[in-house]
Image (cartoon, rainbow over all chains, first blue to last red; front, side, top):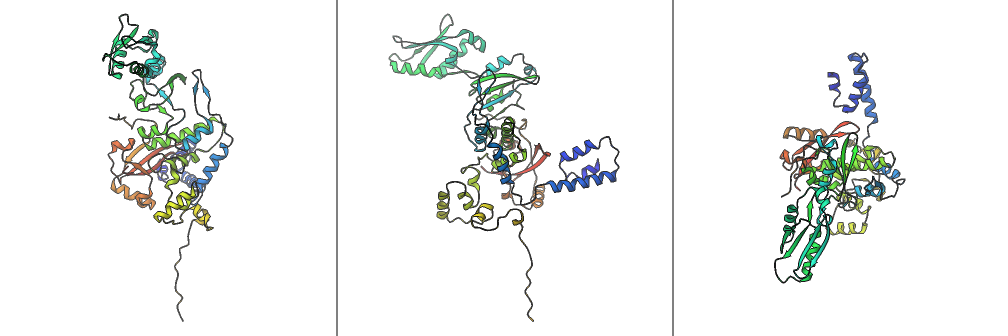
Length: 383
Length: 80
């Protein structure tokens, strides 16, 4: 055991584990073990990326080439509920560009122990789904004489959602200030009456349109829910995403529940979680397409996007804008804009990096071009 | 008011540790780097709110890595 500890700084935990696993039931004495480990360290050092290797270009090629084979299909139907999911190249572009508004936000909601068995998943899913007044009512009618609105309610749906008439009344009256809200005697509808006597028809009509959007129950932003069985437990997949509110719910396992909205993750779980999410999401798409890209390339890209502490896309507004060199920025997109603004503020280009040296026809600091010579120059003694 | 979620309990968040001054100097010396050469993390980041970190502090992050099981990363705390 102690010998392994000596090598902790030289090898990764995974390699040490693998060796331990392999030698578990073989008799190896300490001297031999040391010999094995030394050999492994030697091989490991050989296999590591060398200083000056252009990892960025290699990552770009490794992701870009399989990208040409990806389907351009934006939409894919997953399951019966006809939920749209952005897949393939459009999704990769979306993630790497760091788009704030993604096309199809989705959540995977895991449930805590008693609920995950699947007894009440349907009810839980329904209670999460955002419900508006429009969805639980059958008819909106305006009484012109009394300038009142009658909303006929769908009793079956209300029963499914387990809400009472009183709840609906309070929610609606909060939304609409100038009207008094009452439930009808038989409980099949709610009646809204204008408080002021001379409400114009236009106003009443506007109010009618407004209450259609009243949020009754559920989590805002979740437009569709779909319970799915996944290896002995039930998971709720949703269209629309609202991580903050979902994580507050009692039934939700807030350890595993995730969303595919990288910016939401960054805001609520921090930059490191966002980096992990980028890796996971990109890898998921590539794997889904039956392609094979090493995670290391994706990890490099994700790291680059997250160095500044905020997720930045690989665009001229994101990571490229952070480059120190004017010429490097100009070589990406909108060159004239960059050069003019650099000239105006008198920016200095230190020519530290690759692109600018390519432009100036100088050796680039890559591979053997990276090390510089350091020698002491002695003055020749005069005779 | 914005709702706060206990962030140390999510599968996506790796372990974040605040280093003390001595450890910090050791790391800077080991990698021969100054603080502004390191990746950054905003002071308000959800994962380090409970660590009470000030700008200039060094955060050690122990990530789960598919290639090495565990990998260590450092970020310096900055003002937003």
